[in-house]
Image 1 (cartoon, rainbow, N blue to C red):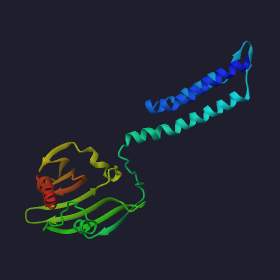
Image 2: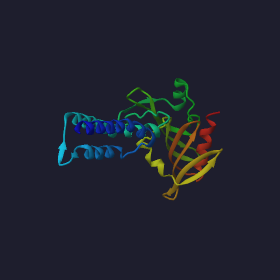
Image 3: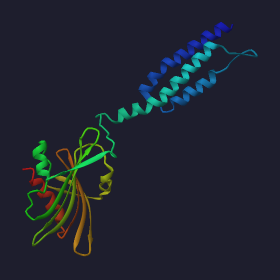
Amino acid sequence: MSKKIDKQEQKAIEEYLSSIPEQLAEDDDEHLAQKGLSYLQSQNQMPVGDVLIKNRKRNAVVISLAVLVLLVCVCTPLIVLTRENPDNIIYYDESRIYFEEADSVSEYNRENHTWFLSFDAMESIVDMDCQVYRFAEDGTLAYIRTELIAQSDVLYLELEYYIKQVSQALSILDRYNYLTDHTNISDIEVSFSMEMIDEMLYHTYAAFEYNGVSYYLNFQCTDENGLEQIVTFMLESAK
């Protein structure tokens, strides 16, 4: 009698084991591990009349099932991550970024065969600082940060802007996730927020994308229409 029950039990468990990979592939069932544990509990003891049958074979199968449940718990998040990341985006350690000084964005373009938009041709620039930030893992470009001051008879501008080519988010640019206004400049959609300070300067945050590269602007300007002028000038630098 006990041999017959052992065979039935073993067959049932083997069928359950063989079904788990298919369930995982089709459903990504986050409760699958719990189901396995419930199955363990239900199969841990099997009554035969008033006697509980326990044997080494069943214990071995139970241990195997426990190991499989553990693997399911570990592998399920990886499968979900793969499905949510179809482009195989590389996520670098943002805490390991170093920087190097650069003469200008234009100089960086010449040395690296890139076509990033810049302000380098602006004649009214009186001071400029440019830094290139790279991921320590392989030296890949994280972003370029440039600060400049421009001044003329009709305009005063303090500008900080970032150039980012990687697709992953960077915490230094989180501020630009909350821009509430939108406008179109030369067929480019620009998100921005603007406020007036000291009744003479317009403080603006803005962001846009051009040719797969993201640009983030933080500037103070005496011209209310400074955003349009700045973005237009940047686009002109690509011609």
